[in-house]
Length: 180
Ligand SMILES: Nc1ncnc2c1ncn2[C@@H]1O[C@H](COP(=O)(O)OP(=O)(O)O)[C@@H](O)[C@H]1O
Ligand SMILES: O=P(O)(O)OC[C@H]1O[C@H](OP(=O)(O)OP(=O)(O)O)[C@H](O)[C@@H]1O
Image (cartoon, rainbow, N blue to C red):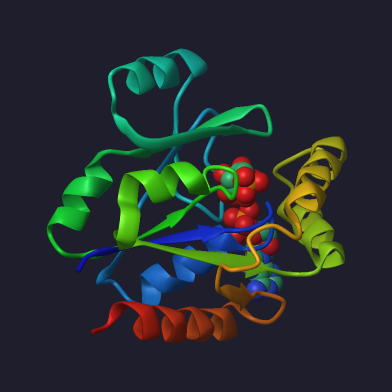
């Protein structure tokens, strides 16, 4: 069965970096791009849309999943469902708050995984990434604190170490849950 590996975790925890590492090591894993109402950052490969463009596409049903966070809109395109239809494994950078919608849309094909790192490291990484202002970074950490103890039942990958170590942990999880 095709699976949608749905990575979640605080902003700055390293989801996009892990996806880029995965894409490099496992070209057969399809990493889906996101549509976001901001420019793409260096550690990701997202498609920038204006708020108006995003709204038009949402109304037209072009997103299989969309959510709002940090004053921005995020969407995953319906193309992803065609990819799943080809019995491929698809990986996405998702939202914890959008997980119930993802479960409804993808059912048993969904494999949710929480990426974790201590808050001090998140702040350090967000500051080093330099995409947001210090105020916006603090707001992201506040959102994270509200969600820090959420989803105790979801399998986790600790990303306090190297991307290579996290990729190995992710691959073990995916193999255990997805390979018959
Ligand atoms: N395992 C890691 N070790 C050190 N730095 C990392 C690691 N993972 C990510 N980073 C760095 O942390 C910052 C945030 O990572 P990013 O992948 O953009 O996070 P997210 O997609 O979860 O917001 C980036 O500058 C990235 O280079
Ligand atoms: O419901 P939450 O789990 O808090 O997630 C909210 C959003 O925040 C993160 O995006 P962000 O713009 O920070 O970019 P990122 O994906 O690079 O972190 C994450 O990827 C989600 O899109």
